[in-house]
Image (cartoon, rainbow, N blue to C red):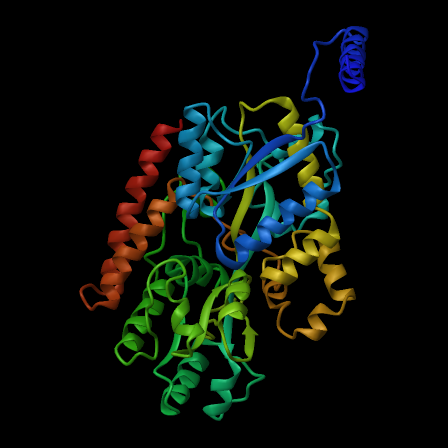
Amino acid sequence: MTRWQTAIRGLAAGALAGALFIGSPLVTTAMAATEIQWWHAMSGPLGEKLEKIASDFNATQTDYKIVPVYKGSYPETMTGAIAAFRAKQNPAIVQVFEVGTATMMAAKGAVYPVSKLMADAKEPFDTKAYLPAVTGYYSDTAGNMLSFPFNSSTTILYYNKDLFKKAGLDPNTPPKTWPEVEAMGKKLQAAGVPCGFTTQWPSWVNVENLSAFHNVAIGTKQNGMGGLDTALEINNPLVQWHWEKLAEWQKTKLFDYGGRQAKADPKFFSGECGISIGSSAARAAILANAKFELGYGMIPYWPDVKGAPQNSIIGGATLWVLSGRPQAEYQGAAKFFSYLSRPEVQAWWHQQTGYLPITQAAYDLSKSQGFYAQNPGTDVSILQMTLNPPTENSKGLRFGSFAQIRDVIEEELELTLAGKKTAKEALADAQQRGNDLLRAFEKANK
């Protein structure tokens, strides 16, 4: 027998003796890290930064390994995870966009609430450390957080400072109201810019955040927060007026519709449009693609609406933990969430992406590091979210099947932009179709 064989035999005997001593079966992979799949919906620059967060966590310890897996768009990721859960092949962690909250809450037995997860794992978890606008959106009526806030965003205004200078506009003064957007858009066009402004995510920007910023309800029962027996109220004077103006501006390309989700981005990246209204998290993609100096502003409001501006609401997504995985994975998920809550991790994520810092400590750290002083306007999302204490109309929304309802709203309002329906007609049809979906959701989840 060689010395190598003797050594191996000695190690094996020692391992067996140790296993017998502790009364456990021999585990030959005891030193292997527990892998925890994290399904997500981020590609491009945001996906790269997400991957870095996972690898940085993995480098801090050897017990667990977070494995990010890109699964497509937000709707694709959520529906894929639900299907995987039914087939008992789900990941431990899945990223779900904010409008999927009601659907996830209704998935009985599928979710391991994050408050319970952290308590079971004995990981510190103080909900008061997180921004109230975030915790309220993702908590049950008892105040227990159901999912972990990861990438929370809100709607802000971006503008091309170079084009503002070309049009004779003050590059340090973004428009504050919709009449100012109209006036500045016309000056941009007079200077040769094809389009004044465009927007991302049509429903989120021009129905949901529009309504919140003007303290106008889009549904009964506190925008659905108060129960499943809610109904849409989007066919109101504010939304009607706003979409009639968009349709009017579309005729001259003062406003140029670029499509759903973030499909309008190239119009702004290329300088075709001087202003874009969209997610604060679009910052990373804009900086990666644009060749101009970027400016930031709050979303515009109609000055003749009493109570405006109020505050905007969040978008983005949270991390939900799904049932049916081994206990070791849950212990690792809790450790990962504790890591994500660190001020330095959150501050880095916020500064790199434009997502909100989910804790007050992360915001304070960003401020003390001089980030906002060195990057004027990057705190506009925080200031806008905390502009006024949230009301029942501006603390968020929670409608069942809302991903499908958004599609309905945008489908109908696209007919307004095409001149085929008035805004009132389109909103009435969207409201009826949306309420039919709400009633079906309520019936299925009683």
